[in-house]
Image (tube, rainbow, N blue to C red):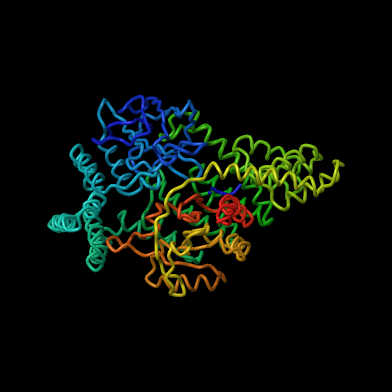
Length: 639
């Protein structure tokens, strides 16, 4: 396995009415308590969709939430669920989805927890983080800088010490609400910080951040230099050096910088904060050693990482890469086995605070064990240990759940162990589900003849694939939506103006991407195949919108990339927002949270499908496009 890729109609939260669709059993529950909820999708953008799922984002004192799946049960028009929390929880946000569609309730579904009957100031900080910066990404809610600024002020009133730590985030919200008022507040704070006779490191860092907010680079650079000179061993200097270490491409130079950094800061391994910093350095070195193919150094630095699960992840990364390439099998097997042992050892450790129960913690570890066992099984297979490979793969699927690739490997291992009948049934299921690769179909053909099945293979495989096509259509039919597509007019690489309205009556595949986006690039060979497949069909149009590309020489970066990859896409340049250049107009209008994201638009200008991410293979991309376009094309063609 690859390394580690609420509901109330009028609940009052943070002084405002929450979005309709959700009802909690308690409006402000005590941290650590259980809360039940119901969800009514009627009136939301999920109201006509089925197979709705729910996930939670749990916040503690910091702003890095922990995601978990929430089991919900349909009861008539409602969905019911339950939330269990640790006593350190401050805030929970729920997100409801149907496929790639999220419930886009503007207020979101956010639940504040209390201690001794009171909402903690840290809760307001986390809530401000959601409404000011990340709530659209996590929960699908609408960002509200004015609300975020108000929440920050509530937190500061309860606990003034929080203001210094969150000053830049708060002032950035005020600046977004009103540039003139925000700029005055920022300048007032810069002046206040500048009047401190003996400023602390955090004072200087705050001043640098505030100058950066106002885009005053010379002043920001000047204060940055003062900070580094006055606090050469401070957290800011350490952060700068870690960034430089990570950016160093040559492994020998990186190793030298790392050793100098460790010696300079004299980290004390007995202190948890220093131990975490040391682990970060060794993680960087171990990961770089893999790229440099310096396996001795990889093992050296990976073993210096003290955190069991981090070390296990490193070992599995190396082992999986080796298993895919069929190289360094002996070392990879040793490290893969160690990754499993480390996960087992971690089961005896104390439960981390962000898990509500020991049971949840063990469940997470078992899932990790299953993923790592998939790697170890493949390595055993490459070394002809077929019995061990099969045993491991069966356990991996039991703990981590089935995946198309993992199930296909199971078929191979079953064949190697002489279990042809079972292998046949597993392969048949994958083909019916539309998840079979060409190599698996080849194995299935051999099994068909070997087991002397009646009739011809060609007829039988055609029947199975017909089932797969119908199943795929049924699944995508459930994901169909009908939302007016925001209009746009953008310029393409040739300097031509391209408008969505130009393609009335046609099916438009709209793909958002950037050159730096790995999954975008990985999907392009498949998109090339899809483009070629529909090239003779005048009713299908492909548009590739380049967005979130912030380089000053953006056009050169994009044109060079297109030339290098030999792409023949119609690429359009998304425009930067005039008021806020950090945002792009069209991608924002389409409420895209991550790329690649594809929208399939029908001839009447309505979004009918939304697909997020890379499906994992070239054929998978083509099948995805076929499934969505196929449901619209007959209708559009008939027009």
